Length: 503
Picture 1: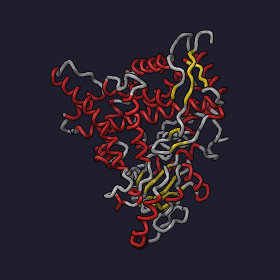
Picture 2: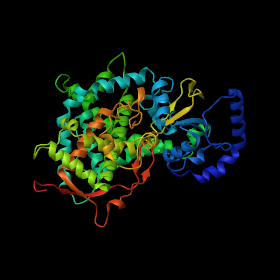
Picture 3: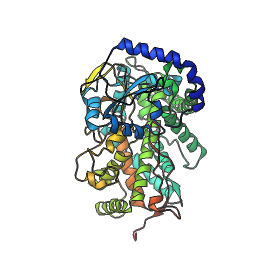
Picture 4: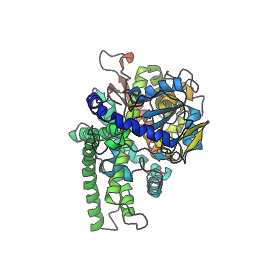
């Protein structure tokens, strides 16, 4: 999170402080005594808001060391419980998964009613289940992913060809474009980006990044819901602009496809994901509106491209900081692949050290450090504590990935730890939950896993990577920028040196 608007805090809040105090006091008396999890003593009105700072995942991890792995905070008017250990994550994501599967909806995603038709923000209602079913059976199945392997390989080879012509590159940007085109070909059968350096790329990335930033920005309207009508920090207004940019692009592509289908109903179906969605729009049992389709596309593109490219950027940063690990990945590739053979997805299973590097990256740099906040649908008991209905819940996956009780030398980048472990990131092992777990696990995880391994292996196989002149591995800035997703605060730049047979 970024710094709060102090002007707003100092001048607007005093006017409302007395009213809010009595509202909170009345609510507390009405609800009666409860054995809530321990937590820091809240300030009047603000509660523990000031304790969050600019990097709440880190602040909450420090507070958990004082108050325990299940902790209560009052964030303005919103009661919040934070789980920061494997044991507590199991309680939230497995044992009480159904009761705690609701969503606390950020005011930012209420823009243009976006939250009403997207998987991330809907409660587990019939519409949510239908959307998950469509994605799980039509886009992220093993059969569908296998059938698109050649397409992903082609896009990665285009990335390699582009890098061969470059002296220094922004790793996050070039991987973002590749992931974007991988997703757009799966959905639309076309590249959304033809030139990596074009203005349209930057505009699309800014819109996607803007959505993730605004959704994760501290918002008084979230902590004090009566402020929603005012949108005091203009977060919802900016979010509306980002959504409209993507809606305009998707509207054009949908209209083109509808025109093709109308002109030749039998011969112009491409059977990509857009065709699947358009078929559902004519299904009377579950009719998808145009707005529903656009919102789902925004969700897939923003979540898929942003989290995957950021994971690749963190992985390359860690490997450049640890040349011995980079050398081990390259050696494994050379021993496993036939000379001159390019990397294929089928090779992933033969490369345990590459898999370990990806797991170690996700452990230290989970794409969504606090996952997406849940909401208690009913009151539940966890370890003798009461979690009241409508409580907001965070699961701090960043803290769990760095917990000394789970990991030896938790702050060290050491992929070897996974060579002796069966821990995986697919939701069964709560020590490593970058994609969440339970019924709200990220549906795009199977595709993301393939893309990260494929692109990372291809970058290492094809190039010797060097840092810009004058930089040493220890000079790489590993500072985090918090949002819904965890980004590198300073983009990683590196020099690709094409490998030859003599390398």
